[in-house]
Length: 416
Image (cartoon, rainbow, N blue to C red):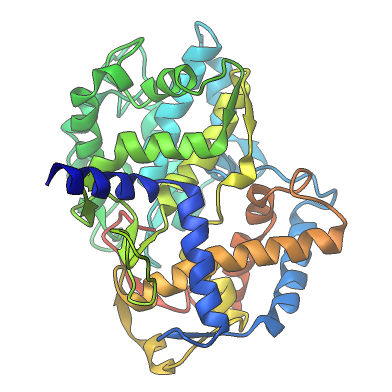
């Protein structure tokens, strides 16, 4: 039995990586191109047209093609003002590491609150007076809570997140910060609060990871990550993700486990066949990869070099996925499915998300070829930002009055 458990545990750990996400996604795309998937057909003849739309959107937003990374930090910029930079530049940081810990605190909490908000919810921004929805609204709400010290246990130091505060966070507290009312509902509010409570409890249980230089806080991962990167000046982006998946895995809702290891954003699909314990499993790790992208800049500001950024994958969420459905690359076999809501664990959604990851790689190659650029000068993180996510939203707005994705996914606030 011990040998079996060890074998299963090793198999589980193999799924906690960007490489595993990319490999399983490519397998899904291969099956799709062979017309062997139950839910979607794949039409690559439409990919060039999508590339042109993405390039047009990118050039409009970034005419010089000086594109930043796709990350949470972009959503803190409103009407040309970087709200976080204004706060951070006025703070009395003790050193670069202190600022990095605070940035890890903010990024981790903000990303974990960033699952789909629903079409109705809006955040009334007190600075601009605008009513802002979706990811941008969620970002501002979380930033304002952070700046006000809502997650800090130290009234004299509001710009931090403490495990003790997260462990006791209620849905009502979150609702107040996010301006949730009966007329302004936020999808998955209880799930978001529960996720942060589990994060708070986990940090108490792992002081060696989260409390190396301070009381337990998400920013403790900065010290842990840099100490265990194997290099004092360079950290590989896939190592960022692997650390997040291993250390934060237990916070996710009860989903799949293998060999006692929680697999996080990993699901079953009957078309994926392997000869080991990972048979039928499709890892996607969307929120964790979104967070990985969002931790690159804090690490860089702290003086580290982040390598192999393209080692991460595209994000399996509804804007990137909607780009390929609305753009005609992915065609549902049963169009009636477009009028139904689907569970996040359904084979249709798992198939859609995995195909999205693989198609983003293909699209990136096409875009680089058009621009005569390579993966170093135009990494996937910049194509996503330029890019695919924004174009997915543009196509959704053209096709549906509420800009909703083409396929409706039932969300508990912890997937995407």
